[in-house]
Image (cartoon, rainbow, N blue to C red; front, side, top):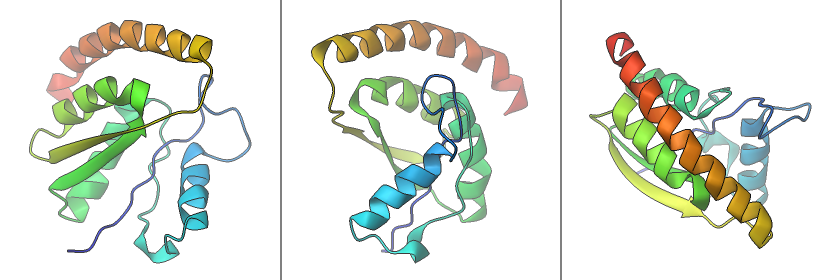
Amino acid sequence: MSCRILCTGGFGEHFNTTTKPHAHYCQQYLQSKGIGRNVFYQPALSRYTLEDALLAKPILAHHKIDHIILVTSDFHLERALLVFSHVMPDVVLSPQGAKSPMSENERDALIAHEKTALIRERDNLKNIDNCL
């Protein structure tokens, strides 16, 4: 079995206000850890979690991918799993949360944000069902 990597993320007010897309930094980090350039798909330059899934879906379908390891921050995993499983119900998801180094106060704030965002995301998913 061969594995490929699809990095997601462009720019967003809450997660990346730099000059390069988030996916660039993800790929750069993985390459610094020894991952070869040839295993990466073109990135999905999304602005938020729902768009991550919506832009990743045709890329994965094009390459006939039916099983993914969904990697994201540990505090964000529940929402990402909700969104990806809704947008891609036929894809087997293996979730993996990455521990994020931060202070307890930062973690508490992000967890509070995720609780609010989960409610919003459930509403968003109800509204897009006709588009999928």
